[in-house]
Length: 455
Image 1 (cartoon, one colour):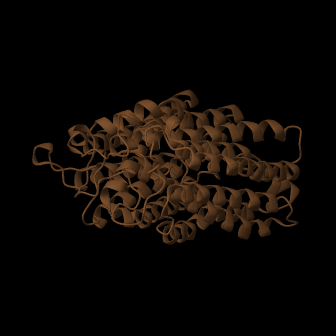
Image 2 (cartoon, one colour):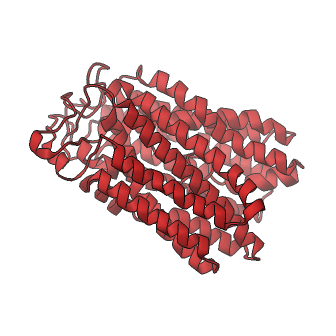
């Protein structure tokens, strides 16, 4: 069951994207500042690892609960309440000195993100017509990428001048953007509004489950496994550039930013292509193709003689990563009923974060025994092998309809008014008695830099 807007609400799209980009910028600003603070205070690698784990683990562990909460509670209530709570936590972070207290507060901050991320992701399909969803996804991803690029730069400038307190207070201010968005967005979902949605004969909210949807399951599992395979480069990369390739700190910074920068054009290119992919199986193949592109660039990166040559490779990989985000977001919106969309986005995010954490652990463990260059080559090759393994799995999933869709209608949709979304094509406005609404921490990258959502 779902809603579909008669006209896309572009002001809502831009407002939500701006709010999300602003908070992502604040998150990266705070994460960089805290890592520098721990290192400057003499804390060891264990403390930094604890910080990264605290920023990631809640998104994995709390995914089922957070997704259910985002589906059942009014989105305005969630964004305003959680946004205010996260702002208060950031203020406490600015005053905290002990590493254990810092890690604990970061954990609480990530718990809030576990709720707001699927809430915003599930709002996006309700803001626009089906044909406009790829463009809306590209707008949202652009805002996230710009925020992720700007946060570390601001941290470098502010920490050097003012220490860590000012960046953390600035992060607290960025969370107020969620509050503003919650108050101003015309599009809302959750609560009693779901009950007002018409049922789609091809899929029901009560019957849909990720494990019973072959194409969604393939997309989620393949993405998570590829991230686990190549995510270790985030740990290995600094040693590869600084030691193996004798690159400067400036070069390392450029290489690190290149992947994220590549996501900007990648998302827009995928948005132009996505509306031509009129069946869901084509979107899954698009996800596999972009994951293969990321893996191939990582494999090529292991062969470069100079660190500067990684920049163009990482730009291409980032573009592929951006395309994967758009394809995954559109597939989720097409196949998942409105009433369970936040849960689907939360589950996908949990798989991505879990794969990213596994990649960190694998890369860190292997780095103690294997030089960086062979590790990066092995990561890229492993990612390609994973994609090859999943190609026949997709073919079987296409031939085997979901138990909730015995006629196979979900992956054989036209690009007409429905455009493959799990919706009846009726206006977005709910029945009068239902109210006036419708239906890293977390890095912006699924593969590089700790693993999107798909938003």
